[in-house]
Length: 120
Image (cartoon, rainbow, N blue to C red; front, side, top):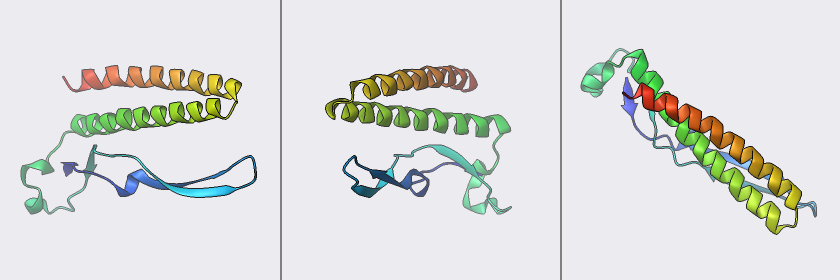
């Protein structure tokens, strides 16, 4: 199994949103994914050498590392959205989204602590 590589396709997806005036936009949204992720070598380890053998804990650690980074990216996106809401004059929505960002970051901090213990 390979653990080290990038996934661009998994990070790209389309978002559609409608503005207050009824205008709908669709745009591509990409997350920078430089995470570790496991894949089966299909029984042929000649292409990946010694990287074929990973313990379940190594694979779980790689997944946790990916999730912590992915969550941090989403928290930043939500904070950016909150700023846009504030600029658009919706202070109440801004406050609520920022409260959600805070909750999101607290949860991700707990996951980061778990990740740190897994990496020891």
